[in-house]
Image (tube, rainbow, N blue to C red):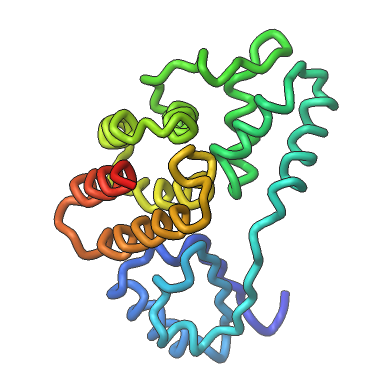
Length: 216
């Protein structure tokens, strides 16, 4: 219908460096007839040769309160009974992924009511279910149990999201309410997130992080 064909590649950051090198060659080969649109969550995983050939648009994550209001309006429109505390728990687990929050709310709505997070089964495999219990353990400062839960439930490809989850919710732990301790905890999380891409066993690396957090 036009001069150019459009190639849309979603989650391009999951392409290996070798695959991205091939993509770069294709972008050059078909530069006269095609335009490529790449979307990603982790810009740092896109090789510089591709980034230099693209016009970049960065979308910041939505405000947490705005997300809370948005999903709350959905529940009200669907006539689902819920409490603000319940809703905040779901937002904490899924933020900033709005689609995940909505899916979790839908999965855990029974007869027009939201289940309390402490009543959710801990052995379900749906993405994010274990984070309800993990959030509870963070709030009580039980880092030993948090480590055991994470090592038992988190798959190898999920660890990066766990680091983000800890960063978003660390201030909820009694041990990290003071600013200096919170800052020390964030440094620990950042250190092990960096090591995540270097180590042979991500689970051992994450276990060491939980141990260090529990020592503060």
